[in-house]
Amino acid sequence: MPALENAFKELFEREYNNLCRHAMSYMQDSHLAEDVVQETFVKFWEQKKDLVDSANARFYLITAVRNNCITALRKQNSSGIHFTENTPEPTPEPFITNRQRTEDADEHTRKIQAALDQLPPKCKEVFLLVKLHGLSYKQAAETLDLSVKTVENQMGKAIKTLRDFVKAGAAISFFVLFIKNILFP
Image (cartoon, rainbow, N blue to C red; front, side, top):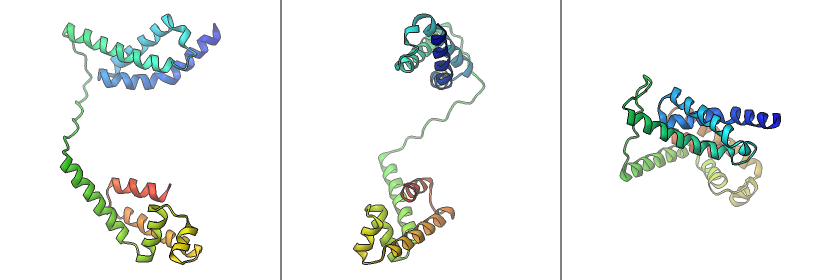
């Protein structure tokens, strides 16, 4: 039995915080969320000991926490008692139209193009061949009839220029993520 108890303790320690966060998405009250998770673990220990070592234990607990949250909310609503913390309601996500998405994408594209325009022509050509088209330094050197060392130097120059452009604050977070994925694959 001690092995089973140790396995349960490990499961509890590994999953407790994640389950509390999951319960918070339903309950909106940290104390109630913790109560639900704790009660779920108690019921799990009492009724489902055979699942403690199972790979499915985590999924069972997630489902049980969700169901127990829903049950607790139903009881709370039917009793007319509402327990909430003194935290402000989260602001809803703004409604974004397809047109706004397209305009945002166009703006992102313009900013990326502006950053690439900071590069000297040969440097830009080398950078695009290597990062956009996926050529190796050797392949880019052969395509442009340059030495591999020249390609390496041009790539270093391009990366430094783009980093400086990003540091200057001329790009938005989307651009930073885009360039980060290109520069640090």
